[in-house]
Amino acid sequence: MSKVVLITGAGQGLGFAIAQGFYDAGYSVVLTDVDENLVAEAAKSIDDSRSRAIGFKLDVLKKDDFQQSLDFVIDRFGRCDVLVNNAAMTPTTPVLDITSEEFDAVMSVNLRGTLFGCQVFAKYFSENGFGRIINMASLAGQMGGTASGAHYAASKAGIMTLTKVFARQFADHGVTVNAVAPGPVDVPSVRDKVPAEKLEHIINTMIPVKAMSSPGLIASMVVMLASEQSSTVTGACWDANGGIYMR
Ligand SMILES: NC(=O)c1ccc[n+]([C@@H]2O[C@H](COP(=O)([O-])OP(=O)(O)OC[C@H]3O[C@@H](n4cnc5c(N)ncnc54)[C@H](O)[C@@H]3O)[C@@H](O)[C@H]2O)c1
Image 1 (tube, rainbow, N blue to C red):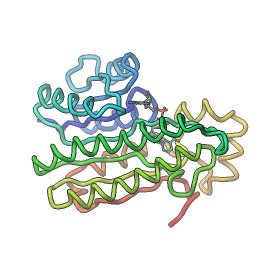
Image 2 (cartoon, rainbow, N blue to C red):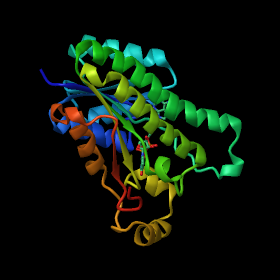
Image 3 (tube, rainbow, N blue to C red):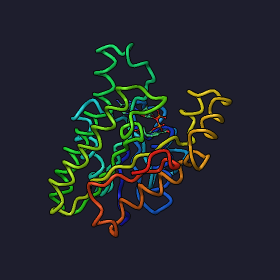
């Protein structure tokens, strides 16, 4: 029986690339997103037969959605092995213009959504004696960010802290919890937000290797963290930022 992964925010971009990476590695893949139509189409494009890839709505603002999704996945596939907390809002509002409503919205989706996912899945994984959680952090959470907003950067720093807390708590239950911190990745959301000429300038002046990461690289890192072999990697944050930030 193939292993099963659930990914949040998988209707497009990196979440979708990660879903494809797990599918190619032989997993059964559950793509979830707040946008029901988007994620249904995304799952269909990976596996038209719906035998090894399915898509449905999971709003990370609702803890119940995580529990109901987990119950559904166990019912459908008999197991769940991996959770990828990927869903996020990425606003670029200047720091002095961020309202309390926008701050709360970004924190709730990015940080509290990751907390809920970790709570629901770590409990189930620890009862089973095996599980992998991979949280999408960001270079912005490590060095304050460049194009992204302060609320986004702060939420990603918080995700790295949550990753360590859950890693420590569940380390002796066969559950690893890790983060991946990409710098700029070549996905539509980045190309949509930054004009082509400006993006070329950023790549050539700000990124030492003069290239954005490919979505496939990030997917491979996540799939590797999910493997049985990665059992001694926990509480870690793997960077892919082209040398922008070395530590
Ligand atoms: N693209 C990059 O360069 C980059 C760099 C560093 C980190 N990241 C991280 O990678 C992840 C994916 O980034 P992306 O560029 O693909 O983003 P994206 O905006 O293209 O996709 C995010 C997805 O999350 C979904 N989403 C939003 N709110 C949700 C909610 N309440 N519940 C469920 N789903 C919700 C959206 O519908 C969307 O499909 C994010 O966590 C982001 O912070 C991206």
